[in-house]
Length: 233
Image: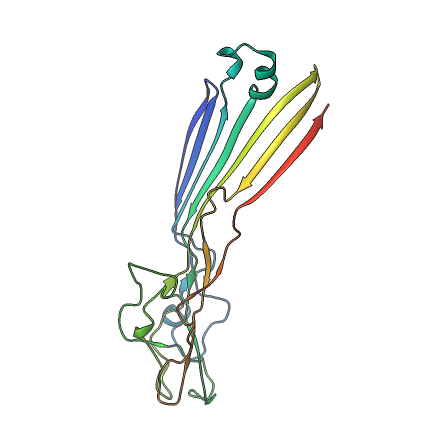
């Protein structure tokens, strides 16, 4: 893994820092095969593997408007506001492809099981809601064959999220004040997909019949906002 951080200290009311991780996590999985080479059959990316993880956070003291409009009302409403936020950009999780058959036939008679046959490249450069990977290149293994798919063959949707907080401190006494706070999660209401249907289903002729195969099936939370008033002493 490679980890890097950058920080700009609090100067003139502004502070920002960021962290980046480039990594790869591999494992033999939980169950070792009995008849296949573990390096071939079980070795692959772990469920928590994320190639890229970038986070950025900042804090900003909003300039006091009363400096330009010296008015008690303006001072009470527009002064002493602060903004803070955090942004996350994370690669998707690795995923394999499972399969079933309409007939439920036992194609291996036990052993280490089977995986699908990859007939060509599966990763798409133009992923979409209705086709996250190339489903046409996924085939049914023949009876007695293991299939050639690895533990993981594609990555699910990643994360692109911004959270923002605005708050104002209202001083009552030296050690007592109110804090008016407004928080927004996924502030830009960016649609973020979270999972993909990776379960193929084949009929007796070997045709894939799951209409949802390769499509996005769920999204992460939409924008959520909340406000609060807190008394600190």
